[in-house]
Length: 115
Figure 1 (tube, rainbow, N blue to C red):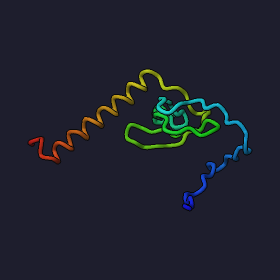
Figure 2: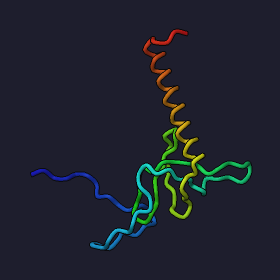
Figure 3: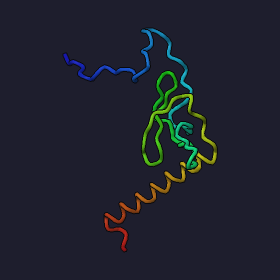
Figure 4: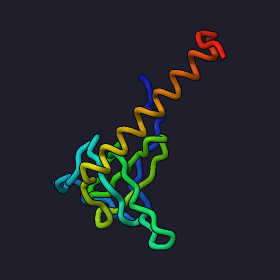
């Protein structure tokens, strides 16, 4: 007989576990959704809220988001809003540019691009 040696998952710090058998709350966002985290906006110097895509949602609405550069952070549900069309387009453009640069670098490393 095999023994499961994986650690028992624990809830994030500051979040009380739900009672056993309690229904899970509705999840407000789905994986892949574009969201803007208002807590990352800066007034001076002016900087807009970070836009990310949801990669994980915890019960209670906390989300883990990821930037086009693959930086992930956790955001509280009260700080999130759906990203605007312009924010989604900027996110996708940055992802496309990173992929283009990476492909060019791989071609150069393989000797496919002559300088």
